[in-house]
Image 1 (cartoon, rainbow, N blue to C red):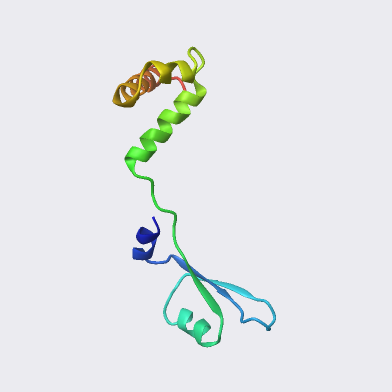
Image 2 (image 1 turned 135 degrees about the vertical axis):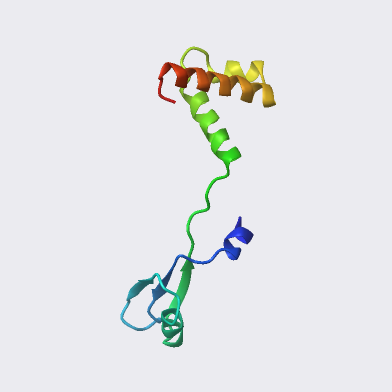
Amino acid sequence: MTDNIKSLEPVAWECSSPEGEKPALAFLTSKKPTVEHYENQGWRVLPLYAAPVADSAMAKDAERYRWLRNIKNMSAQELVEMYHGKKLDDIIDAAIAASAEKGDKA
């Protein structure tokens, strides 16, 4: 993930006053020429990045985890012991879809 962040543009910059001076902090949302100005004055400038967006597979896995965590009619351990891999995913997805059709909360 670190490589992905390095390839992204910062959304803001945190600027801290130089050591030995009165502590001050500034947040910038525009890079030019303000960042260079703070750097030239000896301030520490730290780029800030937006959190990466989860991909759809991760989001689906998170949804399955929440469903397993909240099931009431069968323990999650029993379900996981009976099925695994894609079969387990398919069973959970079908149960989530059935709950949605009935209007249950996910």
